[in-house]
Length: 365
Image (cartoon, rainbow, N blue to C red):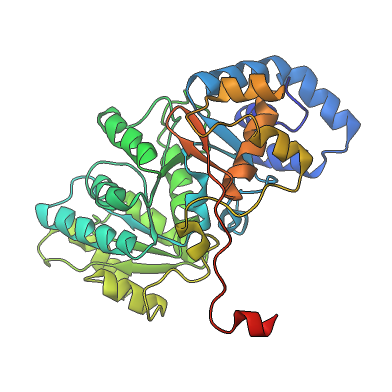
């Protein structure tokens, strides 16, 4: 059963009437008249969307929910909700966007690969748009570390370009994340991509443009990054190369000149290359969890998740909860380190012993 502010109900409203109406609904959630009107108009569509998302293994999260990326709430025109597949915890790590030309040169692809590999090796998330060329090279380079986020200009069940379906599936399988603000089967429209670009820059500490023509969409991402207060960096190229002209223009306008990942971190003022302010931190690197959730509702849902793969349908049936509510609580459990999302469902992370006292700890007690 869909509740009044469920992600599916909000998604149907946003699709029909736009993000502004979606934010109005979020801010007026106790307005009975507004609630009744939305339920009357979109209830049936919301039920169908919930079913569709379950079939496509797509989850939803609203801007008011725990786990929604704080950085996106700070940008102009933030999304009211997101559709996603994969590990939402990627959005808790600091990220750097690596973007560039679809028709990149061989050198551009090599540079994007080296940058993304070194950035992700230091624990930073590489964000891009799953497009051909530079975007795909950046995602693939980050795959061994599982630290990449792909932001789409269409629905997750209608991947564009279709040739990157396997890449998208591998991103999810390796612990990465793919997301969109459009419903699963939404077709990619030309105006979707500038909208998508604001999310790529919004999720990132900095935007690195590897190659870009004079009319490249990557320049739109760079402009949005500046409007959002993000750093913009560019890789210089041969003066005769058409796909370097956009980068050279950015450099003339003040973008930092980037050749390696070391240049990126230096421009950000990061001395040791470790992710500053990561919510995951060292605790996330340790297996298991230290305690049970204090909330009784979350504890009940956790009991429905096994140490082996447990599908969403099995969790919903065991816990006796609506799927929309269970999905929201599973996100909370995942963020708390109690469960891990894997292809096909969830697994329960084991308890681990408290770390031993370090020298001097006992004296401090």
